Length: 75
Image 1 (cartoon, one colour):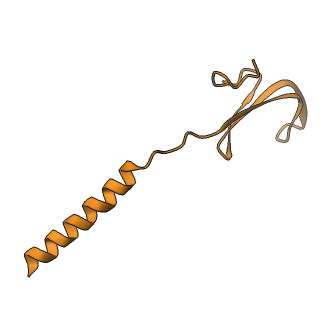
Image 2 (cartoon, helix red, strand yellow):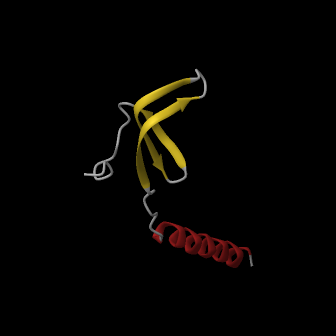
Image 3 (tube, helix red, strand yellow):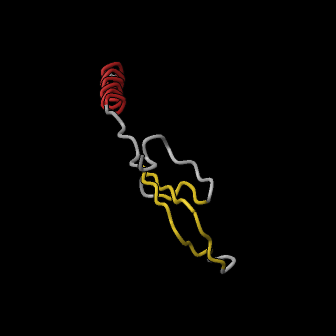
């Protein structure tokens, strides 16, 4: 009886793992915004010539030299 139980559990785990590994993870959507003016809320200063890079639903980088992934710089 225990052998059947272990076999069933192993088969169930194998199926679950194959379903998870078989799915393709979509790459995060990346958006680059060139900001003419940007307010630095920590210092209260207005910055110019800044780039905001958003990947998925998170801000990845902000700055004058922010890394913009290839094909996302508007050219």
